[in-house]
Amino acid sequence: MNGAPVKIVIRGLTKSFGAKHVLRKLDLDIFQGESLVVIGASGTGKSVLLKNIVGIMTPDAGSIKIDGEEVVGVTGNARDRINRKLGMLFQGSALFDSLPLWENVAFGLMSAHGVDKSTARDVAIERLRQVGLNSDSADRFPAEISAGAQKRVGLARAIAAEPEILFFDEPTTGIDPIMGDVIDGLIVKCVRDLGATALTITHDMESARRIGDRVAMIYDGKIVWAGDVENIDSSGNKFIDQFIHGRVDGPMTTELAGVGQA
Amino acid sequence: MNLLAAIGRVFLNFLAATGRVAIFTGISVGHIFRPPFYPRLLLRQVIDIGYYSLPVVGLTAVFTGMVLALQSYSGFARFNAEGAVATVVVLSITRELAPVLAGLMVAGRIGAAMAAEIGTMRVTEQIDALSTLATNPYKYLVAPRLLAGMIMLPFCVLVADIIGVFGGYLISVHKLDFNPSVYLKNTWQFLEVIDVVSGLVKAAVFGFLISLMGCYHGYHSKGGAQGVGSATTNAVVSASILILASNYLITEAFFAQ
Image (cartoon, rainbow over all chains, first blue to last red; front, side, top):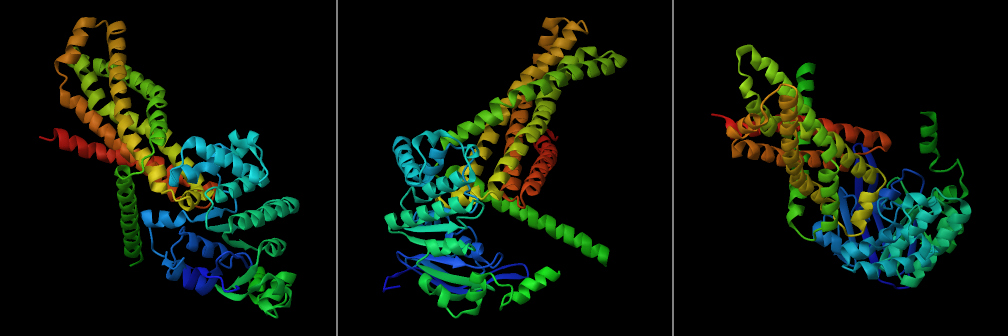
């Protein structure tokens, strides 16, 4: 990507759950400052890939390097140090339901970065404002706001500590198309403002086109195509063509039909 | 052969589960002693486990003391040993009934709540979110609960000791016509420090086990609402069994001749 250094290098990543092989020696490079979107059908290992990178899961084999530092198998304080570089928006937002919104946003600042409560609250309110929520909402609880607003708060939490790398897990799933557009816009703005490297996983092609500089498609535990988002319609890749046009016929048909016949 | 294989499988599963609990315990206890500490979370758990459990523990203790006085009076009257009622009440309460019954009541109240809260956090990815925010879930969620359980159940049991003895006193004096000063004298006369201390040690162990089981089952719950429900049930059942089993071992350690 225009000679930018590689921020995250993934080599031979393998993960199985019993007899189900989800990731099969997957290789992927994510360049500094780019927004990479990994697309793929449900159950193809997108979330597993992301969870292995952020350390929520441990791969069976393979290597993940962030800024040249191996992160597989790293635990405890060393893992916490790596995670301070990261911010993540979860599919279901994963807000702490016992805390008001501002504390959700300020959580990482207070807990991991040692910021005092008063300063953290000011930062949290500023972050909430950045994602379109006013300061009146700061003292409300996650259960009191809509799913779309929860996504905004999740995004505010992800960017609160100005991380170097942002991860977005299905950012538009579970919200209406208009709110999805809003969330995508906020993601693009936040990534650009922070100058962060971003990895998004989604099966929403509209979202992928809005967010991504580059797109990679995962199928059968491997990356089957990766390229600039402008080239996705002329990729000539049969997996990509089938996926973006939502066709039943194609190289993925056999597996889909097998599921249907079961 | 199939029967042997089934027995072997159950045994291996038991060993594996024991190993998982041991590892969970080791990691969690390690985080009690290593900074950063979360005093605000500890205080919240102290209030939840200690203060809010007092009504249920107090009610259990007062009725237990009352029943104990009635039962021991009617039993001892058969061989003219009614004078031992006060001693039986105070020893039974302090050594056994207060710690065990308080432990079981708190297991139902707190163990279930911990498993449900942490289990919900697990299935809604809140625990994963903690990790991505560079916050260790063991340190943030488990360690304060273990510490609060160990500190606060002895406090609850001490209160239960007093209320239980008071329950026995009420029945003995107002229903069975014991002389109040004689009853109190008999209560103190044969009570030794070890009777109270053994109950408090039991309470500390029970508090640890209740919190451990609540956190362990909640932490490993999966599968949505059904998984959280199972975690809650397992937390209460396993904590109750461990309370009864460890009660025997601690009694053996304190009082076996």
